[in-house]
Image 1 (cartoon, rainbow, N blue to C red):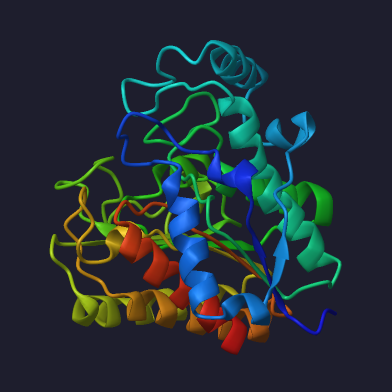
Image 2 (cartoon, helix red, strand yellow; image 1 turned 30 degrees about the horizontal axis):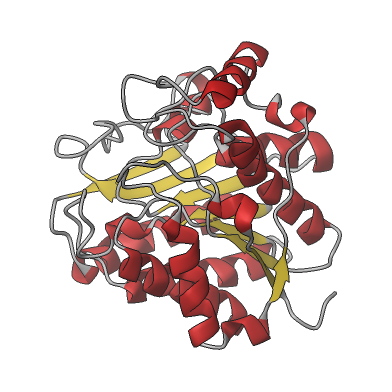
Length: 316
């Protein structure tokens, strides 16, 4: 085990995952986080790892071969959209998205080998992409790849996926909706008021998995009081089901002041979620936890929210 228990993935290959021409998911998000990390001196308490590209076989754990080929083709020309209009192509898109996914699976390898207990990748948590199509700024769904990789490579079936991004993690939820073993808990802005329009409280799984998933929609302008009202539901759910590995998608777009959402959590809510999940990971998962940055389109919120998560992971 390293003397530093937490590693973070930073580097230009991750920063390159960003859309141009004023798109809200721009390439500056990585640098906003890194600048604040350095300002706070958190870099002295963690180990920085360089981005790693995903191999084709790792991408294929979640995505169809046809879709991967399509991303590669669109990446060469940089023209057109991979979905109905939210996810434009750009030159080098395939390589950038591969580094997002590859850094996440590299983090899993390092955690499982005992090099670190925790890891954080800021440009990750692309939770809208489905197995066969992009959606909502997300090309490859690194969350889904992480779940499938933990199972295929390490035999870990009881993976817990917790999502506090303002948008419902529909690409994860529907891909594992009928999977009893995938623990899924998602606090998000009510889908009747925000993309993707899903995540109703009654969506608890399908088939044999009915009742095994936890969706917690909250109203627009929900603040930390609302967060602390609903968060115990997540903890109770996880402790009842005793996961073997924890994934956290900590999107900063649920923090007050985001330009495309209406939630009003503070960075302290993100810190609390990370701190409590670290404790649960210590109780059930040998400390194993991976956090992914997710959404967030206010750069100050990204800087403060994600460093709050990292600080909680370091201190827990």
